[in-house]
Image (tube, rainbow, N blue to C red; front, side, top):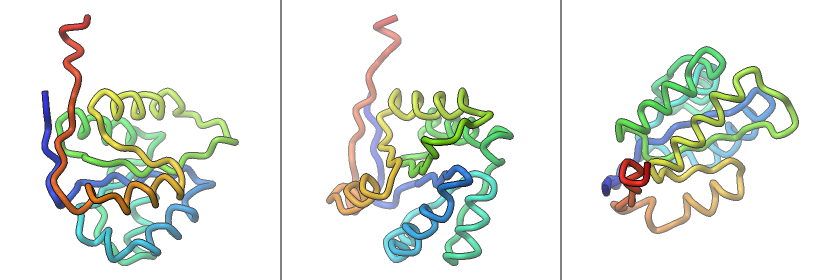
Length: 144
């Protein structure tokens, strides 16, 4: 199955507590590009970005309260095209299984995921960010 990502992408913004400032700094540096897309985020992250960067971000629940799972559901429904998830590799999270599930569903539906600044920079400077892109989704039903 193939899915077409439109020129205007639906981008999820997620950051663990110790990485929120890093994501916010990246968002501010890329504000002009980001305002051309639809933005979604988990709890506090979406509120901080809306307030501090002046961007409209649709907010889901906080990650530990189900926000990661909400975004995962939107990926499976074809409503999220891209994930920026600045996660903290040094701190255990109470919702680690939810994080793993979100990353798994992103791979399953061929959604690009940036987990740090350099990956976000590389992906956002790609020609695909300004064009339609055809994601190739593997038919796992036939493999089960």
